[in-house]
Image 1 (cartoon, rainbow, N blue to C red):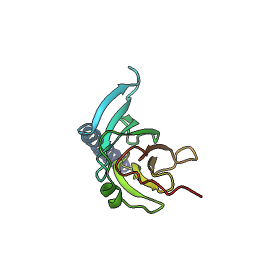
Image 2 (image 1 turned 30 degrees about the horizontal axis):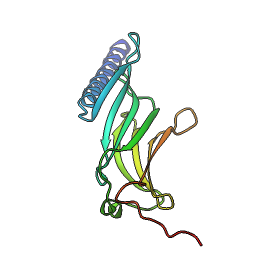
Image 3 (image 1 turned 180 degrees about the horizontal axis):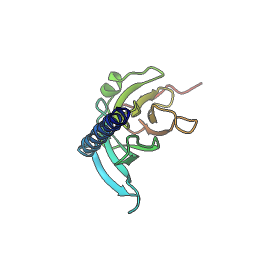
Image 4 (image 1 turned 135 degrees about the vertical axis):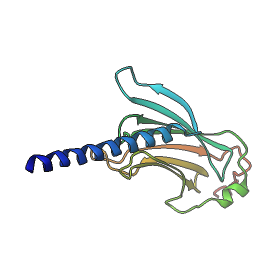
Length: 171
C-alpha cells in the first residue's frame, strides 16, 4: 500500500511539473509573439538566453521613440532583470503633447512587459523635468536581483522642439 501511495505521489509530482513546463512554454511562445520586437541577438549556441530589442513609441508624445534591450531566457521561468534604454526625438514634440503628460515626481507608466510568471516585470516610466524641460525615461525591474533593483535611464531634451518654452533671463 505504501509503495502504491509513493507511486501515486510521484505521478502527481510529474503531472505538476509537466503542467508548469507547458505553462512556461506557452508563456515563452506568447512572449515571442511580441510585435514590438525589432531585434534578437543570440548569446551563443550553448545558452537559451537572447538579447531582445524592442521599440516603444510614447503614446502621449509620439515624437519620442525608445529602444529597450533586455535579456530573455527562452526555456526559463524567470528572465534576468537587466535592461537598457535609449530614447530619441524622432518626430515633432508639441506643447499640447507635453500639457497632456503626468508631471508628478513619479511620472507615469508608459510600458510594461512581464519578465516572469513570478510577478517580475520590466516597466518604463516617463518623468518630466520642468527645470531643464527634459523628458526622462527610466526602465526598471520590479523584483530585486542580487541585492538591487536593475534600472536604466535615457533623456530627451525639448530644446529645439515646438514644446520648448523660453524662460525669462535672470537679471
